[in-house]
Image (tube, rainbow, N blue to C red; front, side):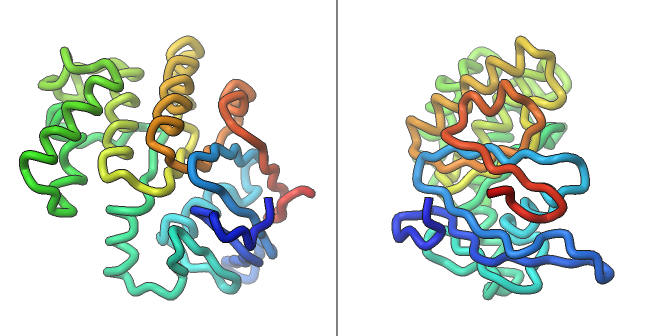
Length: 225
């Protein structure tokens, strides 16, 4: 796909990032369209985590540009980046990162509260997502009463709740057994298609690549062509 494509949800152009004179990303360019799922694969130390940090606005690149939903995020202030992370870009982590004092329902509702979604709409979205992840019967359970697969389902619903344009998934099945991981991948595939959400999935799993439209391979900070 052409990185300059005008219908891209995500467009990365000539991205470079170094730490202590060590180049971690070097002239990286790619794009994602709405609803497209792309796997990012590479060995440890290849630049995958730095890529996610730059795309999520955690790190700023040294040069190049990142455009998400038409906005060049490297030009944004810290407050503006926080708003983008709440509304436009969501992240799904390997270790779930659910708040332990909140129920499944409350964890899903939290990002909607943070962006000021009205009560009625918030409740409607949360109940719809609970149905989609098939956890309505576990809605009031705190994370310590959920299985790993159930916690990841809640994390997926929480990521989708603000209706982001882009989801960054960091080894989303890495902490799950193979059967549960397959179920989570199927859920990611069906929900991203239903909601039209672009997804960049960092993974070492060949199974995870099967739900993706294409694979990007990174080595020593450079995308293989």
